[in-house]
Length: 94
Image 1 (cartoon, rainbow, N blue to C red):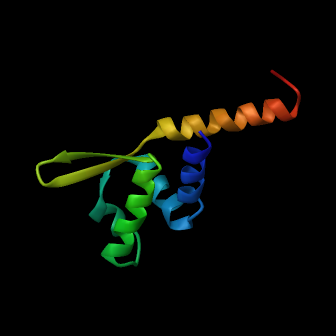
Image 2 (tube, helix red, strand yellow):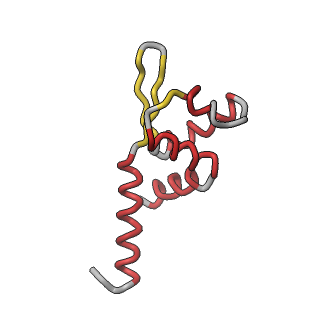
């Protein structure tokens, strides 16, 4: 679990990636839709998506030639559960 957590923390440490996650929390979007919110090159945007996919924070599905991206909430739920376990442990709870 530690390696997976490190990957997730690395992904959400970047403000641009956090904003991408925020956008995807509202609706499913294409990479072009997301990119329209930022002033950056296509390779840079692709890098951000790759980091988010590697962390499991973004899911994708293909519809014809279009790839739709959405937020994978399972990883965030796991992260919150880990945080709650950590907080309980610090309080001496089981």
